[in-house]
Image (cartoon, rainbow, N blue to C red; front, top):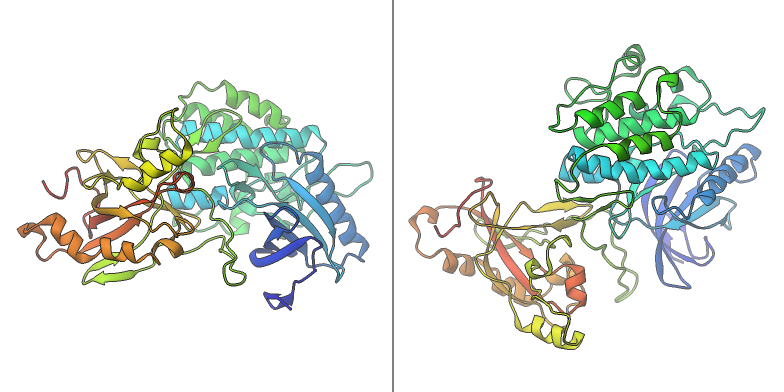
Length: 485
């Protein structure tokens, strides 16, 4: 019988083949899984508390009901199924968001611009407004509960603390169940939650988008101790000084007012003020504007592969594999972000409306990426890496020194398969880098880092097989000239 995390999982959740644990909280675990009937990847949240307990039963039904009321919203994680496991624990089957959370994106890519935060805020605030209009108070809005789906779209998640006010019902929740940095001031006084409480948390989440870290931090960046935090609840949200953020900070200031009466009554009014902000769209190139916001720089999620038995990709995986190809040279792997124009993707030739897909694939197979192309920083998003092409006379970090074509039988453009291709190791070795640099005296005792950039998933499925071997002078950082100049 299959085991995951020490427990038998075969048949535990009807219709779902459970995979590894990808998240854990105080009251349950989240597994990655596959909905067997349609082969769809899903996330399965299994509560650790027995369903026979009446309080646990009410809590589970509250979460399931809250999630189902707004499950069709484009910025809410979709609920697929609910039930009870064979050993008596309640579960929720939800869509899988393989790009992690907004908190992961902020850690990996840094803060958003004011315009990006406004655009992303519209999406999340729209979802929260739908919840309020459905009579739901979320109670735990924070970057970690904004998940990124397979298309880069933000989705509000985790209605485990959601409240649906009813006459005579106690809606109090212990402070231990909340996230102090994003909890409204009234939460520390055990007052019943209201939509204005969510508005405060939404304001704090917007603040985190432009400052990268959660509010209520000490000078050294660590979380503020609870006693000190309580003493400072009335302090206004600090201005991080982001260029062009003055108007956005006014929205945040109202949302995070100490007195609930001074805040937006619901997320709908906050959404309207965000929408009215006169900020340019797309200044950072990572977030598409408007209420249908989506990240443009996230790679396609890695597919499930079942070769030789079950093999589950982790939600967060290491990307630089450290394949040594020579003294001072390390071979890693990167995937180009799908925001690049088609002609700029590694290994993907320009396409025209005419011509069959098979003809385009044949063209892609014949073309290797251009040697000498320069690239911006390579970044890691939940275990997958993105890179953007750049002009060599502007600030960049990497340069293509060799290129080639992946073997036709490579199953995916991801690290495990690409690094298993002998052509990659043969093409991107130390000798190729030395041949590219020539007998330049500047580099005789230099150490370089190298990476591999294969085509992204979209280009790969259209037949592209070209990969780039890229190098960066170790310790130099960004440069504004080619390595050969």
